[in-house]
Image 1 (tube, rainbow, N blue to C red):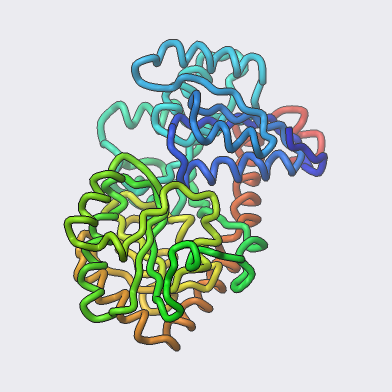
Image 2 (cartoon, rainbow, N blue to C red):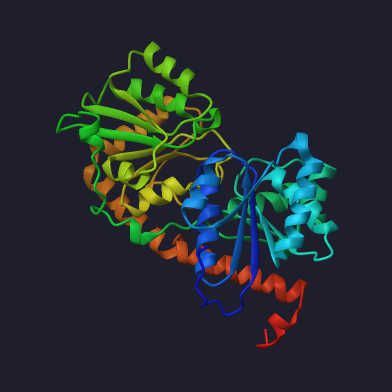
Length: 388
């Protein structure tokens, strides 16, 4: 287990994530777990059995407990989490998905230990206004973190959730790993691109709402005006084969490359001339966008969820309406044909990330919330000994 005795108040923190996939939400959860462990806290990460996240977390040196967490085995999941809470005795249970929040929330309420439950809402997808949502967010959850101010505001306005119980802590990226020009990328050689090729790419788990089909349609439009353009999509998922078929239907199999799941995302981003995020809805603040901005890459993205908080139109990138392939193509063309403006967008993006979206900023804000919640909700000798 990663551990360093540097925390002012050592806490026992249990993270839970029921997703079987591996995207921005899961990467953030692992980053939080690693960073809290390095700060001297005891961290246990509860993952879905057999998930990629489980494997990645183990390789990172984290303490991991795989549990079957789904709606069909809810009672057994609750029993398992109840047992783990009793054994680990966490101060904080920090949940990240809907299913694991139900399981961990009920288990935490049943436990004599009664740990504080904090839920991160990663997505901008509207939450139901029904009583079950109110039970989940108002009764089972003590504090709510959102990954952007847009999400926090929507949850207050649409659902009426108490703003004093919510805070926005944007996703942060490790700036030390994102130095423009420092990423050794062989992607262009891998794809056998000509020296003058313009490479446009998207990165993400291939679900329909990620907008990959619109990206491919935009590629078809863009090639009419920018002949030296090539495209790549990094990621896998349930729509991969349908996407491959659509690429062939459009005659783009030699221009649009499906890279599959990749571990070298910073290197892929470094090889791009433009990053595109064509999400149709539900996006919080994309880690991929933050990484691209950290590498001084111009970004073209759809105006959904919290994206506008980091893609400031005309300043750090360009925004387009969702589900509009033609608008997407026109904006990418604008970036390609205006090199000086695009370069300045990249510089502005790096400055924005340095100011507000670093990994250190995210971890410090999260740790501060943990300590405040412990002080306000569960005063203990640990918290009062030093006058907290």
